[in-house]
Image 1: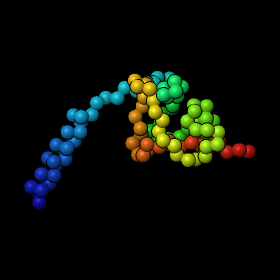
Image 2: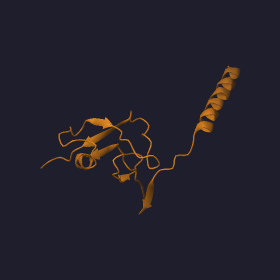
Image 3: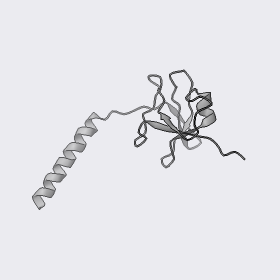
Image 4: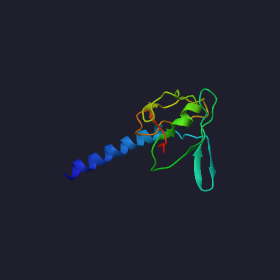
Length: 111
């Protein structure tokens, strides 16, 4: 049993080492302001996003912003996930893990 645990630990550390060697730092376009981090990628159409980063937050954009950025038409559904937008080379951000390459569009409640 001890031999199996040692072998498992060795294989796990070897696997982690392989991935760690392939990982490259990803420099994100952004700024730090008033103890908050923002990323500012630029879309292929040249429009700049200003996204607040939050480790516990959801991945969404308000419908009005998505329309202004040209990500959806004014007829687009408010809660439909859309494909993660394409960004200019050198000013992009990676797709968040677990997002399945989608981003949600939210409309504020009326009333």
